[in-house]
Length: 496
Image (cartoon, rainbow, N blue to C red; front, side, top):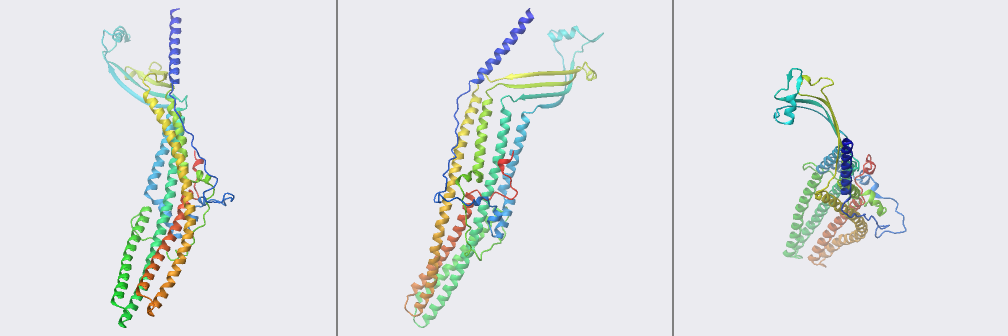
């Protein structure tokens, strides 16, 4: 009767303890979460609402988007050799290893080990009294120092009842996928940066060529002024002013040459190599027509922009992290077991079955007092999720604004270029007119000088406008999410 009473009493205590732990785990503080708003306008600002878009330029591979073979060769080198891209690849490898580590956490841990020690207990203790009263074998008493030798297998397994470990693995998977999107976004920006720098270099070549042509024109005008001075039809002031204008433009040559060197070095830096000449096609830059762009629908940005896809994955990971943090309030269940050999003397260690040792047990543990760290982690997970939702929304708004700005920029630059081109044609013709009038003594030398100066400035501005046109197309391609897709690219959303 006493034995049954003690068993019932022990069972009741265990049930009461388990109930108390469960009730304690239910006292979870309230937190708030945020659902991200992904609403976008049906069309980009300035586009025709009733016109169905013909496609999306972001879907074009960058090797097909850029027609200049020199540029595509440079981008190919940059994507392979850029140091930041290669560093990002190592971060992806770290994230992939984290998945493997998280998966291992909810699998059983099995190890093998051995130990050896000797111990002498006091005679006036329970263990000492037992050893004094027993013989190792008939006629042989216990030694003063009793050994303990053992080896075997040990295993432990935390039961993932609340899916804490599996959710943590899913978080690691999402963070790995987000790191891939981070690399894609880096490649998108790299492609655009190399292209913009390349076209800037080509534009500088054209500016230098235009400046050289203008210097030749001014030197010819200077020769005319000197000749007219001999016939007293021009004075020394006119000669000095024309000579000063020639010297000023000759000095600008070195400014442009320095800019060309710096731009070449910037491209080499993006390509992950030291300084060397950049092969390029500059001759037909001014006759190049900007590529026709198709912006598609704003909703397509969610799939095409790597930074938006990354923010979306980080938001999903933040949501799951709340569940991981919440599971810390619940009891944890674990099983541990051991199987091997144990003896007080090495010569008995492999005696069968006397030296066989086995153990099996389980643990049930839940936080009860001083849960401040767990509550803080839970609340921090909530704050992180809300922050990720806002960041996701911000990425979407920023992407829409970037596309809308570049669509408008392309249209305005086209109109700007047409007017500047007309201006250059008029000023170029006015140089010949001014020279003829000056030779006929019907125009002052300052009119010739100012006409040449205005024509040069207008030509320089026209080249800069052409560069801005091309850069606007490149920037729209980047804003749409183009540049990271390759022929063998795999959609990250399909990776597991």
